[in-house]
Image 1 (cartoon, helix red, strand yellow):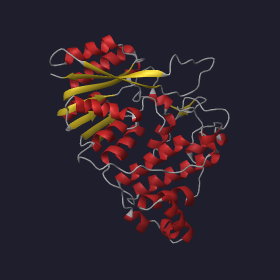
Image 2 (cartoon, helix red, strand yellow):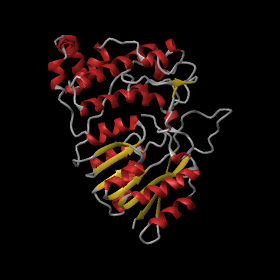
Image 3 (cartoon, one colour):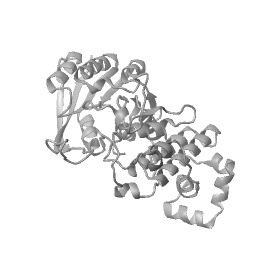
Image 4 (cartoon, helix red, strand yellow):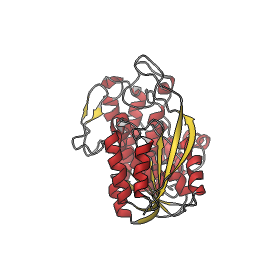
Length: 371
């Protein structure tokens, strides 16, 4: 998924740093999980990971990529849904599954994408041309609606378990992002159809990672989770770097993650932002004062022996402030910094109202051994 702060390209740097410091594997807290790529990589390296985030789409990724251990068999679904059984008997369907790849996951994805009838639901009604917005073509919006509704029905009826539900829902969120008519975030849609938006929606699920058992996912504030975990080896913090609230930048993935079956989301404005009456998805990390306080509180709440903070050279927290907070909390009054250059994530191109200063940024990893 296109995501501000995504660490996919920096995973080798992060894991190499952990190894160089002689930490773990053991129990780790991925405190601002986002798309869960770091938690997934830690799990693959033998860590038992507790991941947390305040956004529901992050919880979906945590469940799919950190908690789940194996590819579901979908035995109950194939036995219990007559429409799936009818599709499976079709030679054309079996031929399509063969092209997609072997396994039960391919079978279910082929059914959802090619055989399930599109339907006009919440996404098509509000985020496609029929609803006055151009985030998705009408066809792709109706496919998102149909797949999301079917996943909800299967899960509610017990035809798929939690692991299968979250693996497929994560695949749907990522599939929707690939055909979203945006520059990478959902703060606005593009007024003409981009080539990616014209492509047909397709599910390309990533299989769960087999690793240390006991990993957990948490839809909660990192400080609360940290206070409940007890002694662990590593606290990894990858917070927002700037004033952009992720609830506004990724409101449509959040809607797909939550669904609209028990409570219909209240939306507002030209882009259809979700109303957040409680402020539960607003992050304290998105202001310089709030970020310093959030870092102090989180480091104070954790039972971790080591903390690793991932930040970048344009973050709200200056290096002096960040290192002061870590040194105050460390066992020896010191912190270490590791640096890696990388190319900036661009949500758009340079234009009259937005000029990127440089394309090259520095990823900064700060380490401290805690009291």
